[in-house]
Image (cartoon, rainbow, N blue to C red):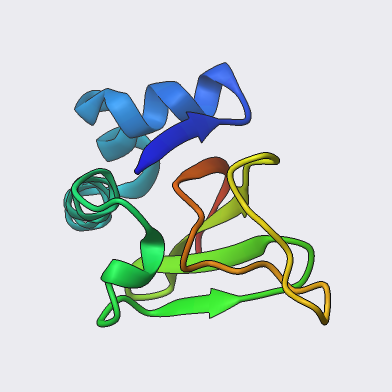
Length: 104
């Protein structure tokens, strides 16, 4: 799966271990690295059924990566299709944008 980032700061946190550790602490930063590796290793997000994912409206989802911490993501337009009830068909979403990290 392709990952995009809403901001340069979020990209820095996700791609630089030192930035993640400074913001999140050692354990949460390690959880973030593992979750990003999980997402990059699959073609679509639904290939990871064990992940704690909450699917929202309008192509949004929240993915837990450590207790109380989650990544908010959106399906990138053109990478998703809506089904009849206008919900995102996550079985075909192959690109997502990380928009925020939620901390407890």
